Structure formats: C-alpha cells, structure tokens
Image (tube, rainbow, N blue to C red; front, top):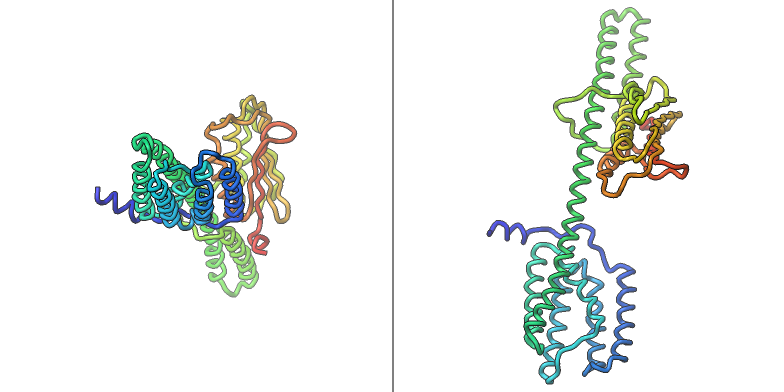
Length: 376
C-alpha cells in the first residue's frame, strides 16, 4: 500500500500542458458576459451583484488550470466556500450562477495534467470544500451526493482521458521501436554485404601490388561499395539498436513475388533499376507486403489488388490500390499503417492512405533514393 501511494505521489505531470491559450481567453470573456446577463435576469438570486462579482473574479483561474492545476483548484474551492459561508451567515441558502458549471474543468484539468502530488493534494482540497459547502446547504446529504457526482465525475473523466492518451503514446513508441529494429536488421545485412566486398577487393589488391590494372579495378570497386555503405547509413536519421539475430533482407525480388492469382488477384508492376539502395528496396518491400495484407484482410468486395513501384532519379514511389469498399470502423486496421509511416519517416519519406476518388482504397509511399538528396 505504501509503495502504491509513493508511486502515485511521485508521478510526473502529463506532457503537453500549455497555457493560457488564446481560446482560454475567449472562453473566459464569453463566460464573463454570460455571467453578467444571468445575474441580471435571474430573480432567485439574493445577492445578484455579489454573486456576479465573485463568479467573474474566480473565472480567470480557468486560464491556468492546465499549467497550475493545484493552485487553480485551491483558489476556486476557497473562494466558493467563503462565499457560501457568507451567504449562510446572512441566513440565506447558498446559490450560484449556472455559469459556475464551467468550474468543473478545473478538477478535470487537475487529474488530466497534474502531477501525483498535485492530484492527491487537490483531491483533499476538493473533498474538504465539497463537505464544507454541503454542510451549509438546506439538505446536506443531497448536496453531498450531487457534489460527489459532479466533482468526482469531472476528476474521473480527466484521469481516464490522461490514461488513454498515455496508453496511445506507449503504443506508438512500441510501433516505432519495432520498425527501428526491422530497419536495423535490414541495415546490418546491407552493410555486411558491402563491407565483405570491400574486404575481398582489398585482399585482391594487396596480393600483387605490382599489377596496377588489378589494383585500380579493386580501388574502383572499393570506392563504389564504400559510397553505397555511406548512402545506406545516412538513410537512418537516428541511431538504431540492432538485435543479435538477423533475418535475410528482403528486396525487389521478394516484392515482385507478391504477385498472386488470388483471390483477390495481386498484380505487381516494377519500374525500378536493378541497383537500388538496399535499405530503400527492403523498405519498399515491407510497405508493399503490409499494404497487400491489409487489403486482403479488410477491403470488402475487392476484385483485385495492384502494386506499382516507380523509381526516378531521386525518388521511389510505391502505390498499393484495391477496388474494394473501405474497412469497417474498429476493424483492427491502423497499427500496421502506423508502422509503415514510422518506417518511411525514418528514411525521410512519407506515407498516405485513404479512399481513392476513382473508387477503392489507395496506399501511397514516397521515399528519397539517396541520403545526400534528403539532407539537402
């Protein structure tokens, strides 16, 4: 129990908390205007002017609810409790403007963005204020139940929203990690091939250094292979962790073998040179493989799948098109597409997928062929 409490207390703040934002200022201004109008037209308010002034004075805490959630909760709770106490001391039933419903965004923000200590301390403040205000009401039990329902609901929604966002972030990190490992495998095989050629040619040149023709030929091969290695290495924009075991690198030959009579039939058209950087060829294959798999699994009523690869001087373009209806919502599609997007992004390219204006579904991927072009 103590370890769970310590973990909850030391939990850091959620990422992405910013403020005040322009829309926050617009929200406060709109709420101030609504408060003034409501205070002027409601006949049941015993202290209409005071109620309006207190509400307007508290509204600015909404500006800092994300960046200072604990302070915002403390100011909101303390101010509303003090005003309720003043009304009770005057013999009045505590009441407030409907506009104060916007204050529920403060406990929501506390559990959405706050650190562990902010959450725990803020929960104590909210609970104390809720009990205090309920005791001052005409029906303490009903007021307490209503307060718990509204305040507790806002806190719960904020906590659930944070868990969902963080779970999504963890999923994306897992996808990125898997794609980096796959790229690392491909890069290892590609580099190992080129380095092996360099070593063999260096041995040939050193065997008889007086044979100038053979030495010159070997140096030319070494230069070309070294440039190929550098090109593949520069294809990665960050350091990748390579696992100990490697699978053979797939490339354009494997991509061509994706052709299948079906159903649905898969046709492959390649317009690519034989000498394509290994890391680019393997990436084109992985994306085409994933695109064909997704089309077979999720496209409804597809009668054919077309895979097209066009390689120009600086760019490789891959298209996977099927003529079926789009997948139903929540069909499980999405993680594979995210993986393809991450893989291509690491190489400086981009992936798009969606309904085709001419019918069906199309996946497009664009990859730079040479690292030097990307860096420019």
